Amino acid sequence: MLAMKPQEIGEAYDQITHLWEDGFNQMNGIEAHEKAIQFCDQKGAALDVGCGPTGRFIDLLCEEGFEPEGVDVSAQMLARAAQRHPEIEFQQQDICEWELPKQYSFITAWDSIWHIPLGQQEHVLRKLVRGLIPKGVLIFSFGATVSPGEHRDANLGPEVYYSSLGVNGFLELLLSMDVLCKHLEYDQHPELHAYLIVQKKG
Image (cartoon, rainbow, N blue to C red; front, side, top):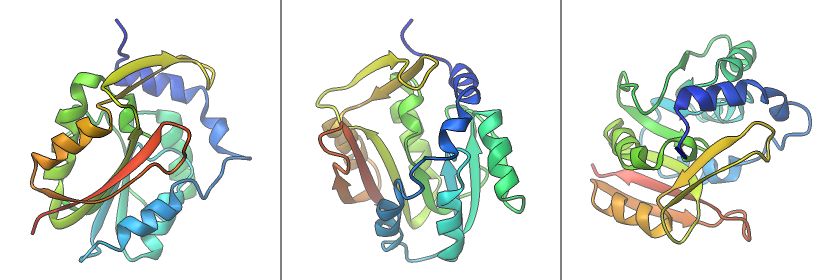
């Protein structure tokens, strides 16, 4: 079976937490998040899905007046995140199964939901949109493929699974929901990496 269970993804990332220490570009994704924050009408609770250990989005959200929380499937990622931000609430959860405890003004899922099974992509995106307050903002990155697909690779060390609905697939899904698409960018061209910013209708 091609897909990996979120628990398996978490265990894989437990082995490579060090890759996000010295040498990692702490500005990765920051400009995109600054752009997304500009669309926020209200700065309340925020959620970082697949938050990882760096805390860079947590820092930005705090600086911008949000009250952020983090969730990740990797215990080791969360342990390091909690060391950096002991005042922040972090939870070890599978985003496919976890029910969001509240609605948020801002949700980010940067380089994270592409690890969930392809068949769960629609379910998770709908869940995240439901988790926004009216006019709340969601930013997420994804594999900028033409068509839906999934694969595994071991470029980071342990084998890890990736999936994507493809650019048009994500756009079609979002246009069927109660959101406005605010921005789409291929931000690491020629790499197949893109992100979308959407705002829930008021």
